[in-house]
Image (cartoon, rainbow, N blue to C red; front, side, top):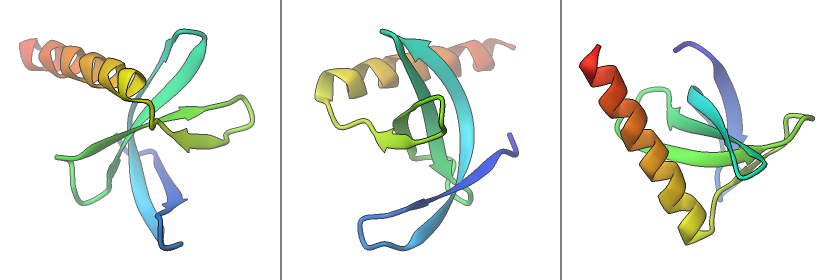
Length: 79
């Protein structure tokens, strides 16, 4: 993908993350990130027009993001 951003983890360390893809749902903007050297674990965040991001912590919202991710992965596998 190639788009990198840096976020701080719970200990305050900067982590290099790669943007996997973005999508909109329920009047919110979402971005799925993964660590640059680990394409197995994905992390959903919301973002606003100013570029501020926040981790998705609500279980229902997280499940929705996982469903979108799985649909996207299935679509890529078909190509």
